[in-house]
Length: 311
Image (cartoon, rainbow, N blue to C red; front, side, top):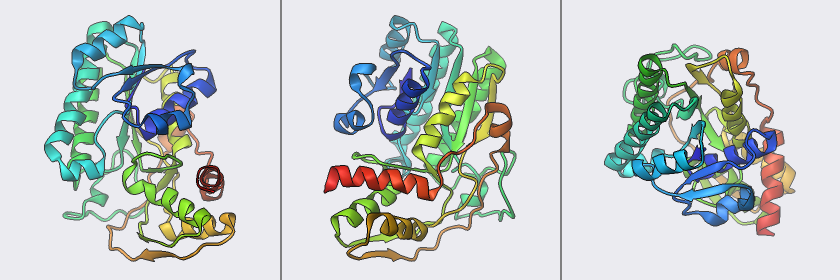
């Protein structure tokens, strides 16, 4: 089962189908953006179960009825939503994850793979930044600077509690800024898609600069598949990412090159905490994770997608 019928969840289902991991994955969520979902996957190849992660009984029924053994849990409120409605974010992200873990315990599921974030790292806290001096591994200090990061860290700890105390398999994947092609809502990471669409439509657009560890959604989705397949790994927190820092400007330049010009994309400078890339050597060693997409390869897919949809 994959929870969360949004951007990442849809690509996880796509990767599971591609890898032949599951003949017909169970896709659980509200499915509010059905057009966006069907743009990524053929809904005839999945069992779409509409429900809310906060409805524990509905979730449990779906898991039991479909004989689910493993879960990739991507459902939750994102950074912008958590900023606008912190109470909803805490409820959805923490209690929703608790529901998944508790049902996994009750029904004896094999493993829960959780899409966490790099936001718990202290280096990203604009209010109390502890400078990093190189690639950040999983043992680096954590002190989230926003509600979203706090919920992610809480869920990681809950998952590890369930692993240590109750024997529930739990792997948390700390993902950086995830970008890709998606016609629905996707928060800050949508800027790369927006630049590509503006470039192919030859329309001006103004966006904010953001230097981050940008990771392509297909790489992040595949990391979930690898975590499911890792038979010898029952628990742990793993960095998955690109291992490099890129700017919105670098994406703009590559998009303009591949799209054949632009009508005027302006990037506003913004002060953000200096960040370093995460060290994904643990995930490489234990899960077999290795990113397959650099900026050029990812932009190639996004520009091709934008041309299909907007020209």
